[in-house]
Image (spheres, one colour):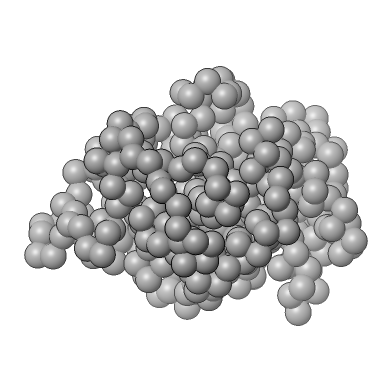
Length: 356
């Protein structure tokens, strides 16, 4: 099967490409990137060495996408992944919409022309911010978790956020672009008879992830700790109890391969959560404990003022993906953190590359 990956030289896209090439299924992998992300150029030569065809194209330019060769399936791994995008001054709101929503439209038109399937890598940030902020939580072992015995809203349990949880606005501009992309993708699938799948991912992490506090927090924290860069716990009393799940992108590939070969599914079964679940959930304070054990102690500052869209607890319940696809995370969190630490030790300039 010929698979086209957008954003192929980013962290997620390149990891998927390498893992698919190493699969026993005999995939032909190709992809494109506009190389505007810091560090993405570093992945081009490695992918080409594996026989992956890498094209220079901008997702936002319909003519660039139109010129790409035909494929059987498209995996959309290109996005501005920051929940602060469009409001923090780094990119404009229009740029965010052009990239995350307009780019999806260009890919869907490509799929329509070539009769290709489409997989959108979406996000846990499509879920309603007020509903998530109102969840009853308790502190245990220096991390937030759902309060025992509390009454939870529909789509939520102690196992995490399920697909039926509210997606009512506000979800951030970033979350809105992904939610709108989901709706368009499903509509294209129904209108033109295309296989379409929506995979809502939790925090993806591993070696080679660009370390930024707004989008690659595990890599950012470990690289900063190793280099003795200043770190702060932001918001929520400055305690560092805010908690996220963690998933290695290579763990997506067994599910993707099933989706590539899947028969027609009901539209509700085409949307699944893919996260590490509660077993992978870690707070910043717990991540600091791991770093201290690995690299030695370091003082972390505290700033009780929250950033826009910050939330105390986001953990995805992947029970639906397990039921439909027998999918489960395969890479344990200690292995993910160790992988990031080894990469950080070998690349002392990684934070500067990521931030450039």
